[in-house]
Image (cartoon, rainbow, N blue to C red):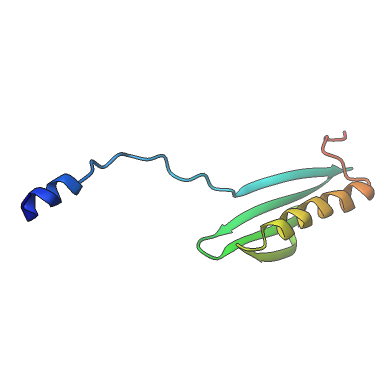
Length: 95
């Protein structure tokens, strides 16, 4: 087998792949009276993710998590939702 024949055997056809799923966007929205609290997740490419808590469109808290801190980030999301639920925030719109 010659060098060009070996390289020809190594070539693989390019297969289109599905792009990787992005874990970003709105995590949940809670309501109380006429107020709305949202928690959004924003990916920071190659570094980690940031969670953003807004109430009535105003940024209240933002926290960055390194990509090695995924469990801590999930715990923070669950704890934030539980804390707001204890204060009377619900997932249904109250009118």
